[in-house]
Image (cartoon, rainbow over all chains, first blue to last red; front, side, top):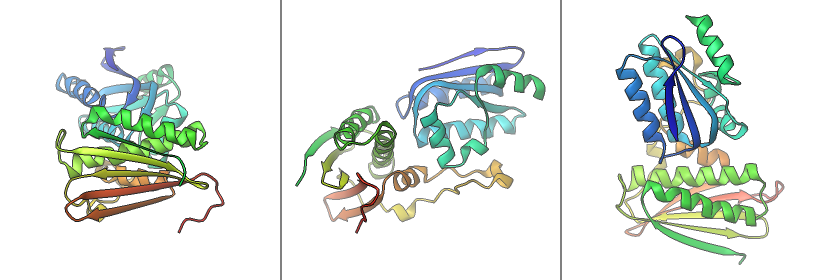
Length: 114
Length: 148
């Protein structure tokens, strides 16, 4: 399940729960599109509830990361469980994204960045 | 021949979880731990997603048949489709690890096949003229087994 809400200022949080596979990735894509179209490009994706990710989920996150950066923002990730982290590190994407242990650390990093 | 089970489903994305659970059940039966079961399920997910995306080029076009088999040393997953030939050499290989100097151009194609090869010990693609593709993925049940 995908949910999103505003944090402080122009920072938005997206939470992913359950399996981020082909059933759920279109909802995540739609959420990113909605936020980008509204001009919100500073994002945190909280994956602490995500128990699974496949290559389609990774592609969706990378596409959003690229689009956010093109518009002066970024996509920070937090709360990766060990198996999800394993999938990221297998393809080296853990070095591409800024990844934080939890929502508080990711939020603090954004506050320092702006 | 060891224990063997088979499941056929229509080629829809919402059926892939069912196939993954089916293969995961076999992997557990073969004695794999939770991490290895996760790897087998992910490889199966990527294979079935590729079939819908690249072979059938859409949902509801054809069936996917998955068979798992446990032998003394090996766990084998065979995935069949009934579409045109899938040529894995036509799929670009992802840059792994990605070039961090040029990450704005980060290519993300070919990750599915990359994961399948990375997570399983042996992956082969065969095409049977007019009958479709047969993908065979093997994972060793013991680390010392040599694969032919």
